[in-house]
Length: 409
Image 1 (tube, rainbow, N blue to C red):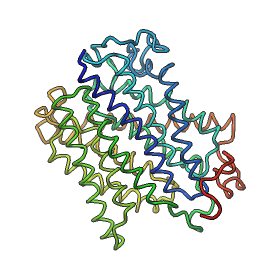
Image 2: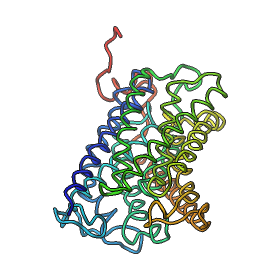
Image 3: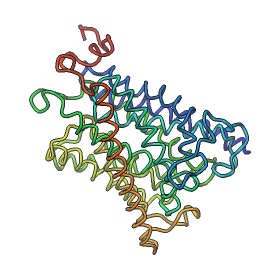
Image 4: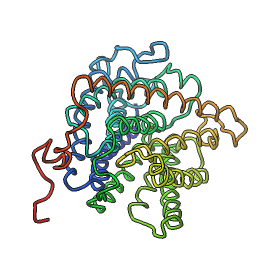
């Protein structure tokens, strides 16, 4: 056990936790002022719910003894046997409880990302049921497939350093299905739904960028050279994507917006997540530039063309950005950065790109099917969507009995 590694991962865990309140600010600034607290609530209640779910059952489903490559066993139910000694299978220099806590913060933010697609219209009881079921039946299995010892995508050779499949693809495509099942917000395209507080969103983006260093560099599971490389790759891709978004937005709309630059940075962070521990800083520039471009196209062009109401662009950013990042890993990965990884197409191993594409396809199909089933089952128990009067009045007052601002603001 290494005290330096342990300290680094504890700090990284706290940084990843901070990302979920950061997400609340990022999303909260983009909704109308009558829905800001309801949007905050989606992230904050997820912290509470999934922190408990992970301890009780989530961790053992994701990282417990493999069951046919599909799910972890129940040997660590309620953290039974997860103590202060290291588990050499996952992190030989860390107490097992520290590794568990680090992974818990990933489990927390992932379902919270989905809330951006259903903002301003989902009933709170339905959201609670959805988060718990989705975490148990989507996130935990996918985490095992990709990261768990014996998981079938891990055995296939799929590379996902910090959560391209596990976090972004799974949540992004689930977000699209949730938006389609719930339907569009009332008045979309007829009344203004502009962000009510862009400085709040920009602050949230900054907290996400900061926390992402814990998210990605912490996934090296040690204070070492690989963590340093990941740190640089993470920042490089975010910077490249922010610049790419700024340029393409100016060419497309004639102006560069602050919301666009912030969204571009987040897109780059999403895109580099699966690749950050396998690629060079120069490759990170390319991944970020293309990540900013494809996410801009998805959010600014394709969403309008196909007419779905992904309210805060959870799919456009995380689904599309995560897909590009996973595929880019198959292009740019090199063992000169991480000997535990693999070479990609550009380093003489075209098979890796095929493996990455397979892992993306499996994750997308599973997330879409499981999310649709979960929502339909919840719909048999309780209504998914608020009624028209509640939606008109805003979710803050209708669902939570409070308002974010006084009537004089």
